[in-house]
Structures are given as structure tokens and as C-alpha cells.
Image 1 (cartoon, rainbow, N blue to C red):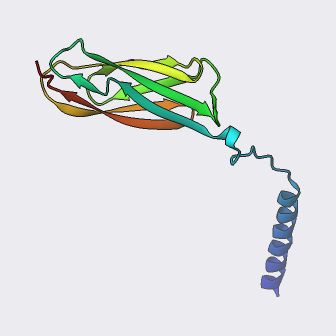
Image 2: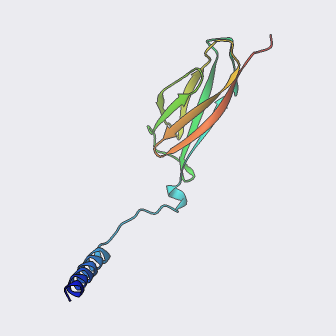
Length: 134
């Protein structure tokens, strides 16, 4: 008998909790709207850098959009690289943030991964450090 009383009390408690939670209003921002889609796309100019020249540079462009429009100005974009040096962070102007990637100048050809992040999105771009024919 006592087991049935405890079981009944638990059922009543669970029902009260379910009714209370069910009466709460949850507000969620829309996530499927094209206006709420955040994108980041990386490009490099030039897309190859001399590995022999420690002053050789490429501009890394990060294009950040909210839907089909540029993000608000002064959105911070953070950059990182696996080879060489890159501007740590820049801000957007009309959805574009530009960083400078500098060659290590060590004469070892290889591929670098450039990573950029703005708000909640991230992109990666591979750049080749090469010997330049003279």
C-alpha cells in the first residue's frame, strides 16, 4: 500500500512540473531566415607566396555576410596561420576584413592553413609557399 502512495505522489509531482513547464513561453530567434544566415569566405591575393623572401606577403580577404548583405562595420575577424605570420585581428568595412600573411623566408616549401573566425562562423584557406623561378 505504501508503495502505491509513493508512486501516486511522484505521479502528481511530475504532472505539476509538466503543467508548469508547459505554461512557460519560450522565445527563440528564427534561424532559418536567409537574413540570419552568417557566412565567412576567405580569399588570397596572390594565392602563392615565395618561401625564400621573408618580406613576401599576400593579402587575405575575409568576406563576412549576414544573409546577402555585409555584416555591420567594425565586426572583428580573428586570423591564424600554420606557417609564417599573419595579422592577428582586423575589423570589417562593408563586410570585408583584410589581413597580411608574411612568408617565413626559411626556404622550405610547404602549404599553410589560414583560419579566420567572425562571430560564430569560421573558414579555412590553404596557401602554398613556393620557390619562385628567377
